[in-house]
Length: 133
Image (cartoon, rainbow, N blue to C red; front, side, top):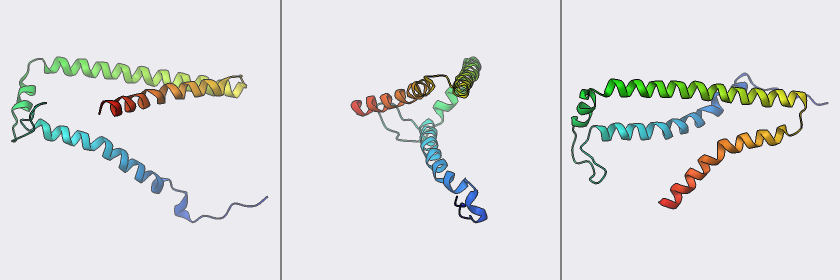
């Protein structure tokens, strides 16, 4: 049996491999957020492009008396959904891991179905947008 080649101390760290992926993901998330921030301080509409800078829309949102109720409902909805989906995902992962440890037949198919249910909506969404535009 051959021994693995020795590595230098810095080669075991995953950061050099993760930094490009994190940078791309950050760009994909940050660019739309920054663009929305730019549009929030303009007089742009769905029909007309921005022609000037204005804080009218932001002031209207913050002066609306319904804002606290809307924010409360949104935070409640997000909190419940995140907690429920995390619990559901953990339960499914634990069931798959336990089934594989016990050697139950069909676990590979079940794992494939779970992964397909996660991947297919994103692919369908991309195809629909490609067809539309």
